[in-house]
Length: 292
Image 1 (tube, rainbow, N blue to C red):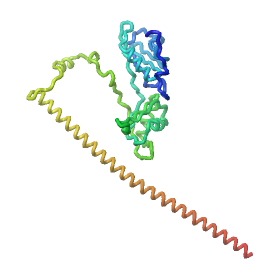
Image 2 (cartoon, rainbow, N blue to C red; image 1 turned 30 degrees about the vertical axis):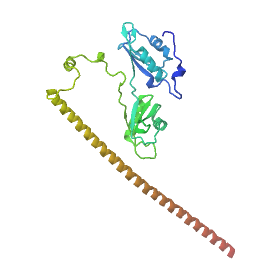
Image 3 (cartoon, one colour; image 1 turned 60 degrees about the horizontal axis):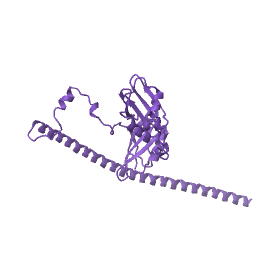
Image 4 (cartoon, rainbow, N blue to C red; image 1 turned 90 degrees about the vertical axis):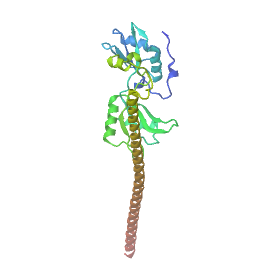
């Protein structure tokens, strides 16, 4: 594929932000003498690179491409590629400026989520997670362009009550857990220590009834089932508490609106009284002038 390039227009979604953290790749097993120019040359097929960083002493680096799709293609094509006696290891870099946002009201969209969190800094991506029917799960992801903005959002939302709509339930914000659900843990990366060999003495199997391992396997299953039931009970309790709080909130909101209407009515009545009083004073002045 040397000398070939990709038509970049085909890999850029309408309105997609470019050179974001989502298109940043980790490149491991680099030769110790590799240069930044050579690194860029290695990825030039996938368009112009943004950030390029190489840690020569530790044999790894980072490179940021224009879009996520281009980075995905580069990852597939260059991972395990031989380079001067080494096999390159290409992975997506961890997004250290991403947050999980919970307790989203049901009518919060991707756009509103991005608009809301833009007050803390530049947002690269904001997504409301939906179920298989396209309904909001009440959880979202916000990815900032840098750590300071993410830290500011985390601190401000922890200290205060950040509301996104008229529904007065604040969102909760926490650092996003980073998982690798694409590569997982290949056998070649498992540490082959003494514990490894001890655990691998037997292959995958079903425990035989009456055996020692069956007895403890059943005890583990009972413990797991107990944990599941207790978690379900906690979830039910929380659900009931949420529903109760929502009912109390709606009742209090109604009372508050009635109070505001009463205050507004009293204010208008007071204005009418003052206007009538001024009118009467004006009439009285005219009568006095006529008498003169």
